[in-house]
Image (tube, rainbow, N blue to C red; front, side, top):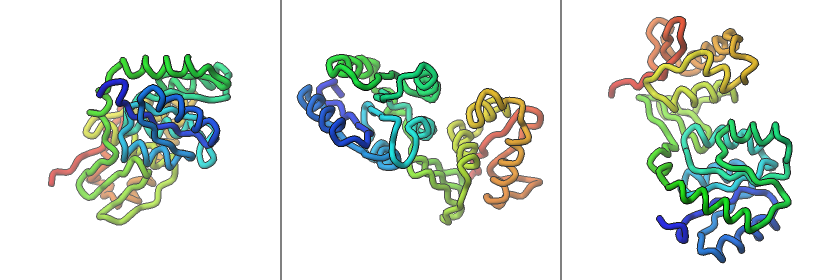
Length: 233
């Protein structure tokens, strides 16, 4: 893939912004994909495998910060945040959530294009890392649509339950510490609130029909954390 043939996914609910970016990017030889909502953006990212995602944070169906978190559960595609939110705290949060760069609106189109070129120069190794779904025996996790299936039947999870399962699924077979799970999902101020995590793990196991004595999927490493087991077929 050369820069001139890169695919850029623009996720923004403002038609005029999408039009401006589309005209500017196409003029540089890029192919442009568009999405007006968070869910449409995640779907496009999974199906089209863009080389860069340009993300607005103020989306109609979900906050762009949450989209970043969801996207990073299965993809390392470079993300350029393009947002009217100009506070340092918002920028830091986006970068901590996985954004590669941040440009505030109103913006210079020349600076924007320079940032795109810089991200493309970092290479496209992320394409090898994208896994929009995970199969673990009878358990299947569809990261793009945030859906979980057990024996081909969809199961309903709360946001926290899904977030815990998705984080474990990012590193199947590896132990994720309680502290890391609490920090990534509840925030840095909750690293000691292990009871939150225990409650979510208990509910997850119930919904996954786990045998408490010998769980198939979520294994406890006593005093350390949890790991997602991949049952042998």
